[in-house]
Length: 456
Image (cartoon, rainbow, N blue to C red; front, side, top):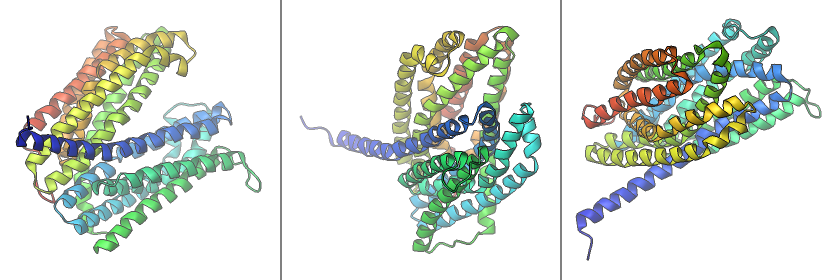
């Protein structure tokens, strides 16, 4: 019996959507995991200098990653705005908007660099480390801060390319840049031939050089495209101002997410003194594994940003709904897979990261809780990407604030009442993520976010 035409069309559309999601999500995932894997390589190189330089690197890296993490809107917001114009058929306008995003990254980067250099001492002092560790951290931070602008330019340029559905170029640059970083770290930290051994300063210099080269490679691709389409490379004051205004809600969204993670860690830290060290160590391992699995789900969210922006830019509301449903299916299935893998591997992961038997014992139930929440996380990540792609940052900011206000008192109450580490993770996995899910599903089912056209 022949398949009805309507059903055949539906299957064909699903296959097309699936192919597009895979084409964007797989390279995005590989690019996402490239950076943390090579950061581990940096740590391994500096770690051979001793515990003090490694601790100093940890302190400085935390400061830098916080600054860069707060500026992730340069990638997300640029992806959405560029994809809209691509969908509307305005490639020159898309590149002009992307160039404005890069100029905004330069302005923020210069300001952030000045702040980091001026306040390096107080920022490092917040961690209360011993004097030798602070000295190592300051040495690294004062050099590595010079790479802030290139890093932010990389975010913005990556957003431009993703908006054009090009995820391969950022992947190639991420891998090549991090290989260069690792090689330079080895050469400059330990010295070879005519090169002196510079210690932790060599690691910072290697990182800055790799970041400058990576930013230059990405910008060169954008510049080539802009010249081909006749788009201006000069900063447009109005365009840069509009990019900054649109970025505000995404900054608030990011701040609420980071605040939720901080308050969760604080809840672990108020455990009874006898259990605090083990709980914090276990929590850190669990959060590291959660973050790594989040890269899988975030790759689909990045695809969602680009696809949603393009469909809405083209004025295709029905297509946007259809591809959103397909991406939600991918998010849910990915969450099921990562959840099963995490549950199966839970008893084996502790010994890989720690020799403490107490940590092994406490890690297993925490990871089982995290495993149960993976399908929910898959849905949350995809919808977050969809709404970012739609330019619905204002709603995400409001929802993030409300979710944080709901999560913080509950997690602190559970911790204060003796709920322990598992209780904290139950709240994080199901109250925090559940509240995010409810807010996002509620928005997706409505139509306020389905604004079509080249601009929002």
